Image (tube, rainbow, N blue to C red):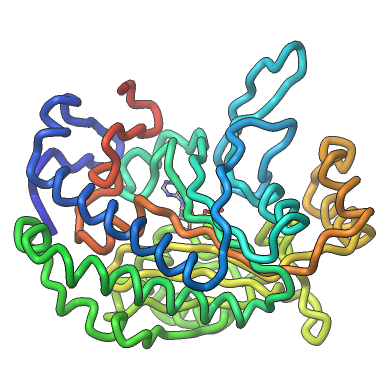
Amino acid sequence: MTTDGPTPATGAATLPEPGRHLTSPTTRAALRIQHQLLFAAREFLRGRGFTELLPPIIGPVTDPGSRGSKQVDIDFYGHRYKLMTSAILYKQASLLAFDKIFCIAPNVRLEPLETAGTNRHLAEFHQLDVEVAGATRDDVVQLVEELVAHIVGSAVRELLKEFAELGRDTDAFAELLKGSFGRMRHAEAVAELQGLGHPQSPDAELDWAGEALLSARRDRPFFVTDYPKGSRGFYDRENPEDPGLLRNFDLIAAEGFGELCSGSQRTNDYAEIITRMRETGENPQKYRWYLDLVREGVPASAGFGIGVERLTRYVAGLDAVWQASAFPKLAGVVSP
Ligand code: AMP
Ligand code: MG
């Protein structure tokens, strides 16, 4: 990993001056890699028949399922609107126009103060958001594998100088470039973590420390699938053959870099969504526009969101995710 620029220690996060950050060779190399990843993602998805949409930035509601972070309200002509924490509701709705869509969407999440020192959390970040009508969870897991292999391959081929500048050995991607990712179920991840003495709850998302622990023990990215109901948003479809488990997944990077992507097959049944909203403590009244569309019928689908700065951090081998942003925002740190 690189050492250019300060690495925030837990509890004492800082960011370099904007001018210093933007002219740093590390920042430039990281942003060139990010540029190539996005270019190659567009190329790959267009080639597969996807339409790129511009994402909304504000709306009456946003994704409630973001662990521990706060949403930001804005005054929209006397109505309380939210800045998007994720595009999930809009992705499902967009399938009324096109069967395969993607967008590169900004998200704002006021993450807890202690995340300023995790090296993995920004308060403003972007997702490469993808949704496919008629797809299953396993279809989109395969799509993620092919997409990530394609875009990392493109960066590795095109940007030798940048990888050298960063001291990132691209041999780290040998398995990834073959499209050979690992797979484990959530229950197996919990068993491995508990075996290592890490107190991971079997009913919850993997916690940050647990995720990093599994990630550090692997030399290729891996999918964790079948998270338990209750650990994720109302939109992840429950497996009818395995009640209590959701048809969802995360992609976790190798080498301790942690989660890169979350996705799932979606619930598109009106009554089921209402039930799941109530179970997850959400008031269906707030989601009127979305529920009206669902009642009229939105396609069955599956999709995912890849954190663009997280992926860049992993590919570039950066110490911290803020190094993958031109204008980083860390929890509680005042910056432009
Ligand atoms: P989530 O909806 O929380 O699963 O987020 C989707 C993806 O966005 C994650 O897999 C991460 O790659 C990325 N992500 C989520 N939260 C953050 C954050 N605070 N900072 C940077 N990336 C994030
Ligand atoms: Mg996630």
